[in-house]
Length: 259
Image 1 (cartoon, rainbow, N blue to C red):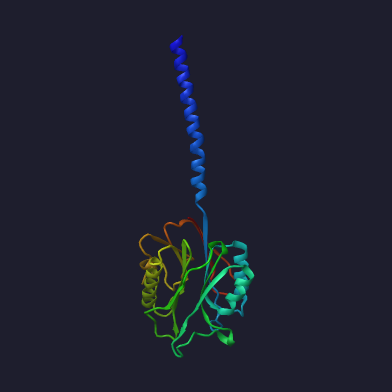
Image 2: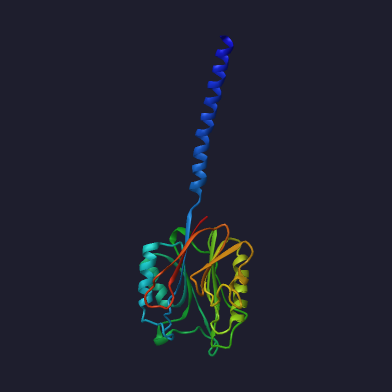
C-alpha cells in the first residue's frame, strides 16, 4: 500500500510539473506570436507632372490621400509627383516626407512640373510611428537613357527600417535594368532592414527581367505590370493587392508583411 501511495504521489507530482511547464510555454508561444508586427508598403505612381496623357489635374492626389487615410501603411513610395503634392499629402495625412526632384539634362536644374507647379520627382511618406529619418540618399543614376529626364533614386533610413523609391527609364529596358541594380546596391548597403517600392518599367519574365535586380535575401511582388515592391526576407510576405487610384493609369500596389 505504501508503494502504491508513493507511485500515486509521484504521478501527481509529474502531472503538476507538466502543467506548470505548459503554463509557462503558452505565454512564451503567445509572446513569440505577438512579436511579429504588421508592416505595409503602398506604391503609387500618380501621373501628376502635367505632361503625360494620364494627367488629371490633381485628381490622383485626392485619391492617394484617401487611400493613405483608409489603409494607414507604414511606408508610401510615390512617383510622378510635384513638390506641392507632397506638402499637401503630409498636411492631410500626418505622415513624414522625403522628396527629390529628377534632373533636367537640358538645363542642369530640377525638372519642373507643368504650369509652374514646382519640382517634379519621387517621394517617400512614412507613418510617424517609424520615427525620425536619418540622412537621406538621393542621387541621379550613373546610367541614363537619351531623354531629357534624368532618373533618380531616393532612400531614407530610420532606426531599424529603410525605404527606397524610384521611377526608372521608360524608353530603354537595358538602362532601366542597370538603374535597378544600382538602386538595389544602395538599398542593401544602408545597414538596415530595407524595402523598395517603385515604378521600375520592367516586368517579370521580360527581357530584361526585373528579377535580375532582386538581391540575394530579398523577394519581389508586383501589380502584374511595372510597379514593384522589393523587401528583405526579414519582412515576411503576407499578401499583395492592387487598389484603385482615380486620375492615374496605375493602380496602387499595397503589400502587407510582418516583421
